[in-house]
Image (cartoon, rainbow, N blue to C red; front, side):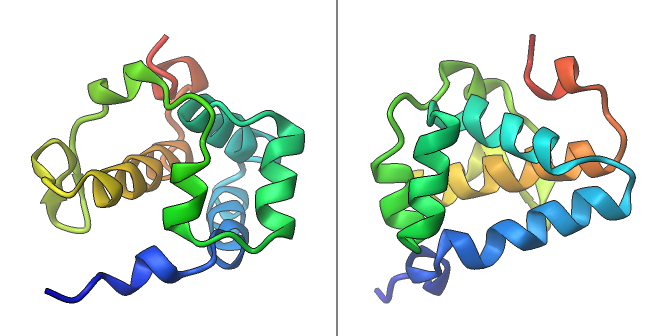
Length: 116
C-alpha cells in the first residue's frame, strides 16, 4: 500500500493556507497558532522551529511534545469523512487539525474549539 502524499508534504507549505483561511473569515494567525499549540503541545518557539525546518506532517506530529488528550473529543465530518472513524493514526491527527481550523473559520468560539 502506498503512503498518502500528505504525510510527506511540508507542514510549512500548508500552514499559510490555514492562516489565510482563518483570516478570510475575520480570524487571526494568533488563533491558528493557539489551536496548533493546543493540539500538539509545541511551544511558540517549537512551532517556529518546525516551520523553519520545513518538517513534513509525519515529522511534525512525531515530534509533537504532548498531543492533547482532549483531541479525542473532536468529532464531525471533514473532507466527507467522520474524523472519529479514521483508522490511520497520522491521518486522524491531520484531520483533527483540519477540523479545528474549519471550526475557527466558521466562527466558533475559541473555548468551544479547544474543548474547554
